[in-house]
Image (cartoon, rainbow, N blue to C red; front, side, top):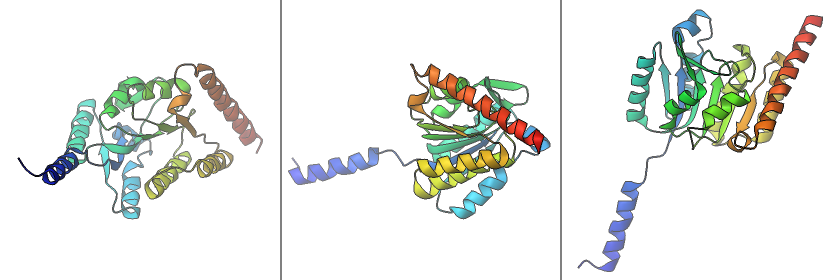
Length: 235
């Protein structure tokens, strides 16, 4: 029988071997990128390049798909290579009901969540129209138990209005967290300057019993959109 001290050392080594690798840092998914290119909304690749230069020690992956089968294959390859990701950025055309994964391929936000589930993300950033509506985030949270926060717009998104998402991602990569006060100031400034709205949703804000809160946030989004549209017409 080996000495007790030796047995303890072996058990510690076994525990280290069994420990799961740390999450990679950022997965960027550009859905139906050919359509985004045609619409001049294909900023995922340039953004990935900038982020890669700013944070050379972070594990970052970019997936650009033009079909659902291609997306499945590419995500499978990335998972095999880099495993889980702490944060995910999705760029694509969407509405409150779902995301265009590819041309003529609208999938519900619940289905999108199932695609993301294996990566076990904590943060999700959505550069997609109406993805920040209460029904959309509720459906996305449901199949992803690790997901803690979603940043998305409850209204239409333009390229100029996507800048705050990039800055929030930089904040997360640099600090490993997103400062609530800094995030709030950034999102308010974005609305004042561009009319863009960016909501932050926490998991507990979208669960059972929070339906009224969701309705109120949707109403606030529509109201703010009307105010900015009227102000722009007067200028």
